Length: 169
Image (cartoon, rainbow, N blue to C red; front, side, top):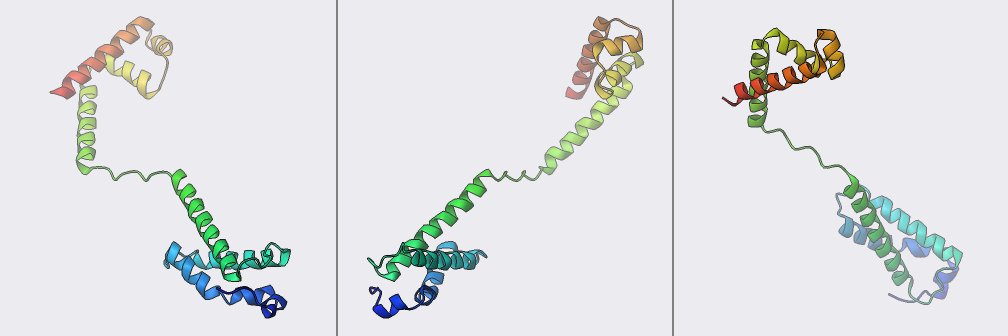
């Protein structure tokens, strides 16, 4: 690319930058993918940034305007990719689809547990209901059933063993 001519220096910076819009657009589309809806926004940011740098005096004319724009374009593309990668890194992984076989096994096991619990003697069923379903403490269950806290623990443990034994069959 050529050095900035005297005519380019006296023309508004927007005109000098806009000559390269097609080249910048091509490079951005190629780097980000033409299906990426943000590519036009990135191109516009590059052009705006280039004009601002020319007006502020950051572009002194030591290199060609094409080289200057190429550098800005490359850096903006890298920044965009880094930003999108950072966002994706923190995005949660979608939950895998449940396996229908596992779901059926879970339902069958729940049905078995329900049958076993319904078949327990009332003293065991009541302790499980108060302790697990109502989420009462061991002492609260003991007061409700008028038994000792130790007896509550014994009944809960015995009932769980009965359930495990019946479900394993």
